Image (cartoon, rainbow, N blue to C red; front, side):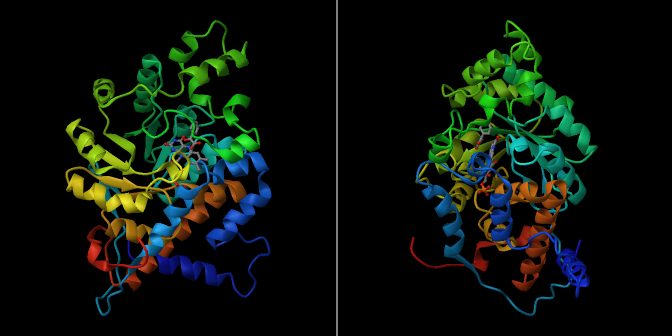
Length: 390
Ligand SMILES: Cc1cc2nc3c(=O)[nH]c(=O)nc-3n(C[C@H](O)[C@H](O)[C@H](O)COP(=O)(O)O)c2cc1C
Ligand SMILES: O=C(O)C(=O)c1ccccc1
């Protein structure tokens, strides 16, 4: 698929000399600023904000600045290849849409809009356990397009098992187990704004539609929504889990299992020991531990421990094409796109997500060519110069 970026550039410049006044942004910072304008304080800070003093958010972004690309010349980069393969499945691009819960607070079409945009562009969508609508509705909107399911491992084993079964039945082809959120972090803005979407019944679509969840309620969620939400707050997270519990997931699904939220190389080793199929290096976009190592800093250390035995993916701070290249040169097989896509959703629904993804891919393709590389699969550390303060 060579020349994706050049085609997009051409498309954009063709709208000259009269670009529409209501044109969508191109610049990441403008998407963010427009999202700020259209969202109320509660939802905006829920999406953009993070844990504590937001030092992890800052270091996620700064970490990319420490690595610099060292472009190579005269290497015939006319035809590029952005494709990768994960778990035996080929993907056109090395991107996935990060699992993001409660998208109804960002746009009325929520996950359905995002999932359709992903299907149209060819980027796999990761359905969150905390999606606004049941996973089956999202799947139905996507047709045959690729999707994975993100599991929040509930305190109630029957709900966890039921989610796995439903995910498989609705055509999700891998399970992402998020380990860094057994409870919501100390998020200063959400506490200041007294904003928690779940308490107003947003982001609980998978639970309210779940037979195992509903079996535990005295009255149906329709009859007594408040009681259903109270029960949700009791069973949502599980801080009691240990590595031994992974066997439970293995016993309940045939799908590849990835662990999301791995930052320590020793945890990467444990993950492999316990037979998982992939790792996602992530600090949850700085939303869980304030002052944590950035995901990009953790990435090469984790990759060293993994030593190519299983795929390593990464998220937290990917904003532009060159960020994707840096992450892949440091060992990631693919990256997850979180907030940029959510700002696109806030500003223009499905079309906004499409444009954000299209532009990210175009930027990636062009920057790849300009660094002298033809294929994302060949990216190596030798392309990078490490500069600046540690
Ligand atoms: C509003 C919001 C909701 C999120 N919900 C989830 C979720 O339900 N499950 C999950 O594993 N990660 C969740 N994440 C984390 C993302 O999957 C991803 O790790 C993070 O957005 C990456 O950081 P970045 O967006 O700054 O690049 C959420 C992130 C945001 C911004
Ligand atoms: O807000 C989040 O970061 C998050 O991961 C989450 C946790 C619980 C429900 C929905 C989203």
